[in-house]
Image (cartoon, rainbow, N blue to C red; front, top):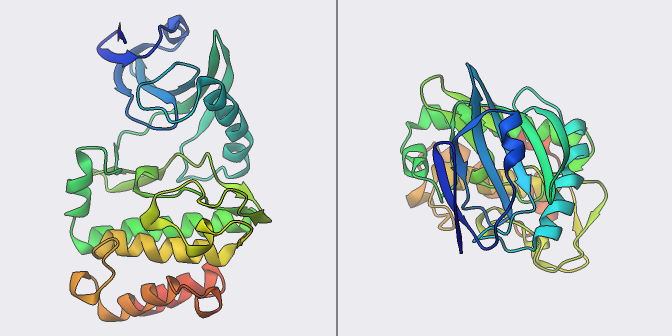
Length: 272
């Protein structure tokens, strides 16, 4: 194991890696090294300008893929970020090959990641229902945009949500596995967090479509307002009417769900 220190941050790698390219962008003030994607990410600053750097190629401790696989994946995401450009999606500024890997450069968003692996997760879940309803509105409207652009959201979960607790602003990141329609399950168990995945995302050969994303949006509601995988009304903190809308969205039978993201949003907002 190799201990690396760059600027104000330290982290561990399985094999040493050349990070000299970071000097072109600023000094790191934070590192994100707990992802299983094989990516290593930094917040860097020069003068009053901050950037977010996402790198692939280093042999991270928690990566579940090889550095070569991580590089290929991160390269493939460039088109996705360009196609899905949106005010609520972290802005990709540039990308390039680096020594031994690949780099994506994003605008910095001054918020916290809501993934369960971060300390901010518990604070996120304890927000007032009214605040979480506003966050959720951003989630469903962004995924309406995703659908309109011809994409299916794969591997969306709380770790893709960033939130500024002071300004109450929401942003999204980590859309690497979003795929253009049509999508067929070619893996069996697809990429994703179990609590957000539709039944068809576990079924080899199944069609993954807009109704799959309706399920994901319903599951997200239960992660925000309910008991996550315990989808009983006793664990639900929003209204009973919203509970009924979310419950229909997560029907195991696709035909019993709302048949489009737009239909789901209309039902949700009519209750509100």
